[in-house]
Length: 201
Image (cartoon, rainbow, N blue to C red; front, side, top):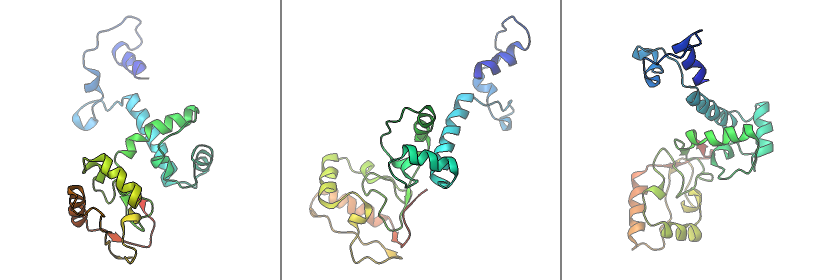
């Protein structure tokens, strides 16, 4: 499609080739910048795939979303399209959506509700950086996941009530520098527990 657009602009209906007079990057700039407003088809294609992935999450009751989720996702939870790690399907349509969902996933964060869907270490929650990006010691994080758990809820004190700031469980190795760093990070995040489920934003 990009090739056809280029030929149309520079050659029109003529058979002979003309030299492009303006860089294609400039031709495709926005109208607001005084350009044509033509779109690069490959970028338009990426955006379309990402939009379909977001529709599967945001509108799971649409007919085509139900069919795709039933056929290709490992559970009925709509957020699986955005959180599932591996896909083995060879369907061209599914591959198109699957590969372009990464455009969305790198900007996603969990809004904490009951803390049962967000991963404590590896997910961004409440628009903050993932803790795994703040702590350099991956072996220590793996050890903490094995002893304490994976989800945010695993680190919340059991007597913590909804609609109140989260009180975190003490880390076993309180003298550890990593523990102290995590405690400081958590103190700077004013997060409330609610009765609603965690949601992706």
